Structures are given as structure tokens and as C-alpha cells.
Amino acid sequence: MTSEQLAQAQLDAYNAQDLDKYCSYFAEDCIVSDLNGAVAQTTRAQIKDRYAKAFAAFPQNKAELKNRVVVGNTVVDHELVIRAPGGEQFEIIAIYTMRGGQIARVDFAK
Image (cartoon, rainbow, N blue to C red; front, side, top):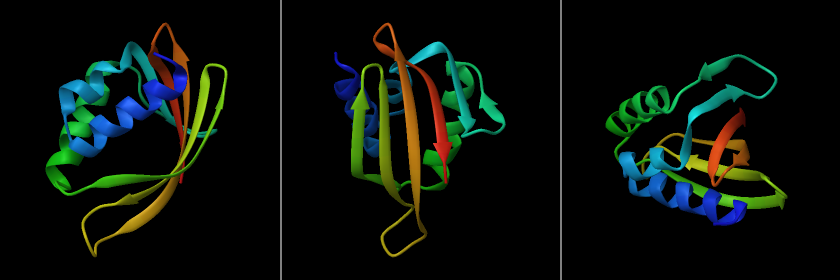
């Protein structure tokens, strides 16, 4: 799977709120952090816990891809996150670093 295909597959699983499939794209030691900020998660289990809570709180949550840039093992996605139809919306940038066919790191800018 290319870096772009991996980024798209995890986005599709996120939008389907398929927690197990979504988490399968992340390395066991994946790091999730705010861009130039605090590290939020350092394991796949912590990522699973984070998104289990998010999917439960926002069952209609979707992320719409606005733009994607791929350079080697790095994918930068610009997304519009919609919590629910007519609900809260916000834009993010997700910077994915791929390693060995999985996501090794994600840095979020919001």
C-alpha cells in the first residue's frame, strides 16, 4: 500500500467509524501530537481509546478531505471535520508519517 493509499484507507475507516479497522493502520508505537506541541498518545491502544470515546460522543462525525499532499512517506491532509449535520465544524491539518506500511506518527494542526 502506498503512503497515499494508507492515508485514504484510514480516512475511510474513520468516516465509517470502524474502530478496529481504523486502528489497524497505526503502528503499535504510533505517536499522535499537536503540531509543535504536546504528545497526546504514544501507543495504538491509546489511539483506540481516544477514538472509541470520540465515535461514541459524535456518532455522525465525518472528515471531508479538502486537499492532500504526498511526498515520500509523508502525507499532509487538509480536512473539514463535521461533528453532525448542521453541527460543529472545524478544519484541521493532519501530517502523517508512514513507516513499514503503517502510520508511525500523526501531527495535528487546528
